[in-house]
Length: 361
Ligand code: GN1
Ligand code: MG
Image (tube, rainbow, N blue to C red):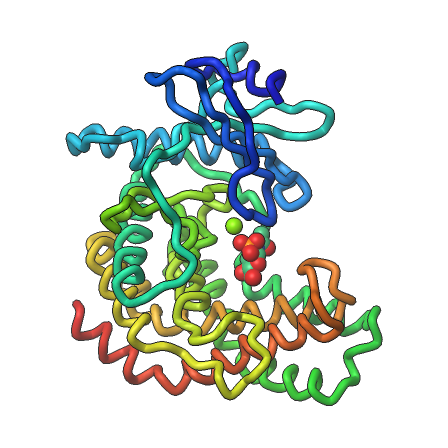
């Protein structure tokens, strides 16, 4: 570890390195420095199975954090090191923010003191999250560089359906004929055309891609001890996408009354109060740059992400559980079914969602 850390231009001397957090994708450590006036750091190993192009990931992140820092400075903000992540360059190359050692990729950022993350949402934290993610997109609206797509076609609905159809044709796990699978495929097919409309609008040139976070769960946000949002973290998936990604994926996780793998489908329900609070927060910071077509389609975005996740979980179930870890044989099917039931509950709320958005404009 000391050898890795010594390659980066950090201040202070290392006193201790210990594991940090419970992330499933990257390995994370806290680096404590000996000196009072030197910051502590976070050392992270980037998972290059999930993110094959680490160089692209780090170029994206450097562009994004540099741009946000400039905005915060221009606004005369104080305490900027707690409001945007600061990655440390290499001693040998000030433009490079990671090092590769034996096929493993490492990076270091400043540890944000006196900050916490949250796992669950209530209307208050949803409103704050909406505002912060909207603000994040707003600050990046005029970033001068084009970002790379760190996971190709990540939220492309046409691609996700194509993946599903390919696995149905091969049926490697012999699960396609199960009656529950067949019933689910009918529900998926019935909505396929409608759910691919973002891709069509993108091709027609009526829907732009903007810099999005693409993993907008509430635990990807740091709060201070007074519950103010400090900054957005976990920037590996930052890439150009339709804004529906950030809006829809937050609600998929935050506005489901139960967890995404909860097995009792009667309890899967869309929480309209979380929807309202998040939407209010989001529109307060994003309204200024959103196009009418983006605002109009926020209810569609709310439905799109449970639908997409249903397709992705079913794809993995039919593939023989290769992507997500499973705890029991039909775990991925339960997840897919949960997302389908969330979608059904969202569909019932379309009129209420539309009405609420119209009021906020
Ligand atoms: C994965 O790794 P995690 O839990 O943040 C997935 C998301 C899914 C989510 C479903 C890179 O996210 O897209 O929505 O699982 N991330 C990747 O639980 O595939
Ligand atoms: Mg994540």
